[in-house]
Image 1 (spheres, one colour):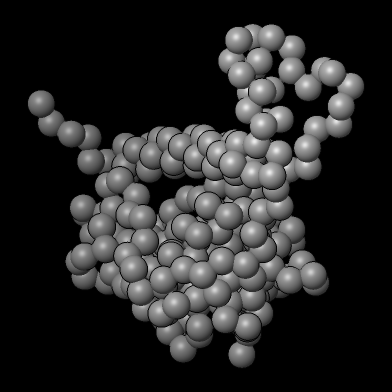
Image 2: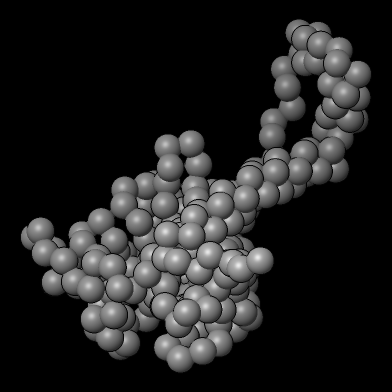
Length: 223
């Protein structure tokens, strides 16, 4: 039995892996919130109502207001030197792969609605060759970004796990994390991006052989 290694089959596998990852992230987020509520200040109330839910009984119907959901953290600390999650079928070894080390990073969403990394604003950078209806191939854009403080996929992973930190303005277009470059078994290079699907945040990988336009900014530290 042979495995179909055509570009179409590989794209299908990546899409299916992305869908599975999204489902697991949604489940993990719900489970995390449930545990937060069950262990919080209103643990007894949440515990009683959750037991009713498991017994398929009506819950939160006694006229009492629901306890306030615990606030999600608006600041987290991650290790930007660790390897990110590597999508199935991709690798971080091989010619052209890259993972920029970033050390300890404090990600913070401030009152202005913007994201900051170690106190510096995270901006969505566009090359001049991406603006005004122009396009630039991913390989060429990658070279242009060599001197930019682009963020790696560790931050992409952290934002997917803490979506409350993602600025609302990022819902437009795709935000790429060029600090990490993966490759396929065939040696094709790709970069991960964060995007809004209308019902939640998701991620994809795009091949560097493709073109980038003004909907494809790079997550970078402000200079």
